[in-house]
Length: 120
Image (cartoon, rainbow, N blue to C red):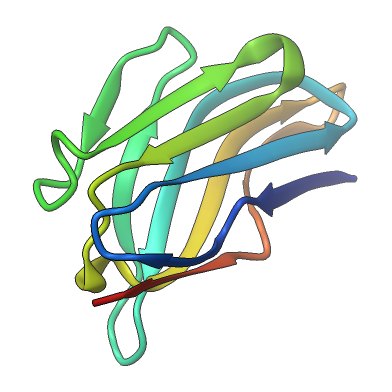
């Protein structure tokens, strides 16, 4: 079994910062791409940032220049540093990971989500 556990969400004032973490555990042979998505009330889940196992990143236009995705392959962990937060960043943030399991094939896994609330 593979689990993704997120942490770091919370309440912050506009202009502030938060750092999200997502750690993968279980029978993992290799982690390919990892990403962060978010879903605001009444809206569809959207991609926030994505990072390959080679470190290539891409971002939603709405967060470019404010958010930074990174990963620590030794810890099977992906991070999202969020700066200059805006009220419109308020959402539940989910991480995902494209994982090859030891002898069990490849699948996409999701974390349980962490709430980020930005007060204006």
